[in-house]
Every structure is written in C-alpha cells, then in structure tokens.
Length: 387
Image (cartoon, rainbow, N blue to C red; front, top):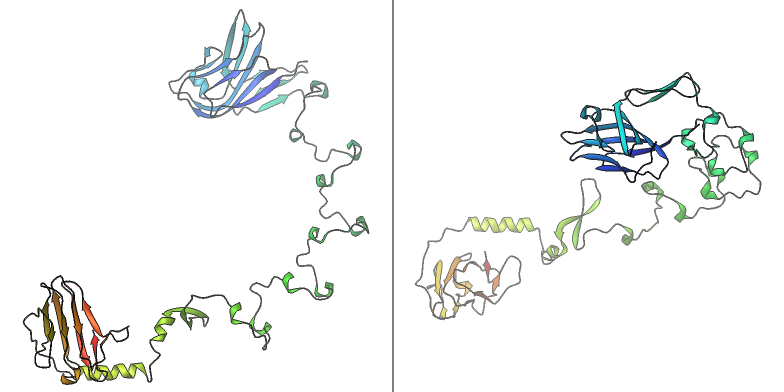
C-alpha cells in the first residue's frame, strides 16, 4: 500500500508557490488568508514524468478580485478560489492536467468504508479504520499526534526515565528520601512552614526582610539612631512637620533664616509699629526740579519729591541731603534719562542705602536711560531705604 506524504503551506504572505518535483510530497495542504494584489500561480520547479500526480487541498480564505489563480497552468474558477476546494493534477502527454472542485471528497479505503471531508476540511473515516500495517516504518509520527493517556505500561519503558519527565506532585513520602540525600536548602519550599522552634541560635540581621514591618515599639529607648541614617531631604532647607506629622523639607532655605540673625523681638510687632507710623504720614505735595546735568549736592531746601537727572552730556554725582535735616519717612523719586551713568551718594554722616535683602551700600548707580528708583529716609537708622 502506498503512503501519501503531506506538506502544509501557509499562503498568507506569499505571492506564489513552486512544487518541488524531486520531493516525495503528494498532498499540499494550503491554509491562510490573503487578498490577491496580483495573479497567484502554483508552478512546478522541474519537468514531471508521465503519471505524476499531486493533490492540492485549500483550507484558505482568499479574495481573488480580478486576479487569476492558476495551478500548474490551469486557471481556477474564482468562485472555487473564494471558498475551500480541492484540485487534482496529473502529468501525461507532456503536460499537466488539473481538475478542481468544492470540498466534497469521497475516497474508498482499501479496507472498505469511505474517507470524506466536510465544509471545514475535517476528514472522517467511516466503515474502516487505520491499522498498524498501513503505517510506514519511517512515518515518524509526532508524539503530540498520539493519544496515549492511560495506555503506557511499565513494560513499555526502555531504560531509565529522567526525573524531569516525572510528575510526582503529592506522591513522594519521607521514606522515599535517602538519609544521605543532603537536599540543598534552596530546593525546599518552606514558605509559611518554619516555626520559631525550628530555629537554632540567633539569625543574622542581614538575613531578615523587615521592610515595612518595624514599628516604634520595636526600637529601644536607648537606640540612639544617628541622624545620618534617616532618608536625605532637600539640602539647605528648613525642616517642618507635614500634614501627617512627618519631617519634610519646606520651601524656606537656610539662607533666608540668616536674615533673622539680628532680630531682637517679635517681627510682626515691629512691622505693625512701622505700618502704624507710615499710616500717620501726611501725603507729600508733588514737587519737581529742573533736570540736574552736573555734580550737585542737594539740601533740605533744594530737594524735591521728584528729582530729574539728565546725563546726556556725561556722567556725574548727585549727593542727597543730611537725613537729620529732612522729615522722617520723606520719599524721593529719582528719574534718570541720558545714556551715561549717574551716581547717587548720601551725606558722609548717614549710613548709606538699604535694600530689602542687602547690607547698606555707600552709593547707588543709575546705569542707563529710563532708570527710576524710589528712596525713603529713615531717621532712626540714618539710611535711605530703597523701596
């Protein structure tokens, strides 16, 4: 009896297929899905001899469109190509002759009965069965194709079976283990099984996994844990307790704290006192001067609320009056226009110019046209506050 050799072919990503005449394959089983973008041809890679036959089974999902689908030179009807079909090819008189039809096949086995296929391509053997003599000694049937559940006997086994091939879950008992087995600890699954009484001696701290487990009562009152062991926070910032009561970094830097170095009493009280003093100041009448164009020393008589400086002709210095000759809190607006730098100086007996963040400066520089600065004299500190 002849054994038919079968070869599966996935048609999804190919544009054609060549049958190898030198092979022993007699049945080609095509599967896959494809919408043809060009003619699709199944050809032979060599000339056949008279009497050569090939079966083609198509379990495919093809959309031929306007493109031809031919097998060994014969164009197949598009209505067949769009469904499941079988084609039979035989070579005689120097040419291939191909017939094709829908998936309704009936073959008579030698032992009687029939082999049929349904619309899905499934084969059914009726009235007969495959027997041992039908299988070639070189068939090499895959193990996965055999249904051997509950059939293999001990006597069927040749040699020793590898441990890895055994399923022993729940079967091994204590007596099966050799007294000299020396099983590695890493081979044991002891999760949730070891009791305190199983432990011998003290367990090293490094062997413990305590993440998220230690609570405040576990720490000795005399533990004296070093501050450096705490998680690092943002450098050079003030520490506060957050909404959870935990230590965290604030937005206030350590540099800001240095501004409080000379504070001798409550800051808010001092601000309130200043606000009270400011609120009692009477508005000053706006007075203006003729623009200054050269070195000038202003006095309590000549100074105005708004001082204009014109440096178009060159740079120079303007000196402010002695603060003790002015009304405490008097405000002066200085406007400079002209491209040259102008220096604003104070009386040698006064303390200089004070900004909100800097130490007193002996003078101010107005370096470009359009520069404006507002000053307020402070009789208590003998300084001009830049506001």
